[in-house]
Image (cartoon, rainbow, N blue to C red; front, side, top):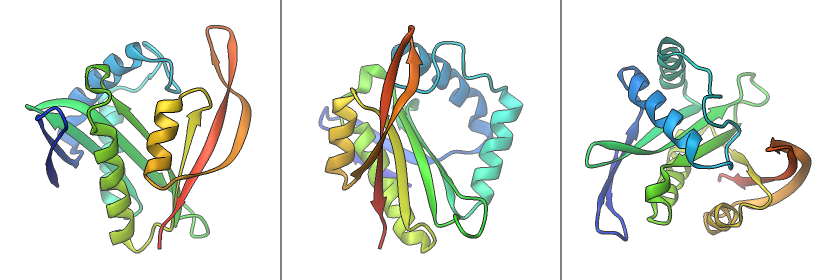
Length: 178
């Protein structure tokens, strides 16, 4: 789907996920879940089997308003983005995405490239007219990345996350697609 050179000089390859990727995606998710508290799941909390992940990938692949992207450096999965569009006619033009990048690749532009691919895909779909996301209110690096990509703050939900006994708010952001 896309090759690009990162600031580090490394080559990033981004493509849609295939059912055969289920195992490496789960290994990746289990690793990324141990590296940060910025996700909706932590270590050992993802709770999806390889077969379930393959079905999810298949479902997304067959849909015209959903997308799962995988980002690779030297054949290693280093980032992922999942966009889920609405299932009913009144909301199929909108959806929400989640994004992860392995900690060793933070700050290299992987997240920016994944988001750029999502926005390009949304525009080319002629279906998606709004992309939404939720982000921890104290995750300033991510918030700045989303703003740089054109997302606007649309609201805040209090106590969205419970991490280590502490409640944290989330910011809801959106990008309208022309």
